[in-house]
Image (cartoon, rainbow, N blue to C red; front, top):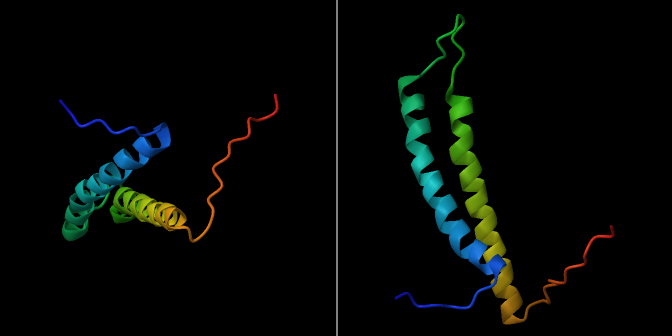
Length: 94
């Protein structure tokens, strides 16, 4: 079947999060580019431009990709021994 690797929940999140956000950023770009190319405006009177609103999804997903790459860089430098990464969890007081 599949090659099984033992990963904890946080590592599974990183393995899935980076490719998914990169793919969503890639898919969201044509949505904005077509609107920008055609100078699309709203149907209401006054006709506000829609490009700023349509630029938010690709910009947000691109920001997530950059954050994920920086997190992976931090984890790899911690594994290399450059610094100690504190991963302790303290349960909140109830």
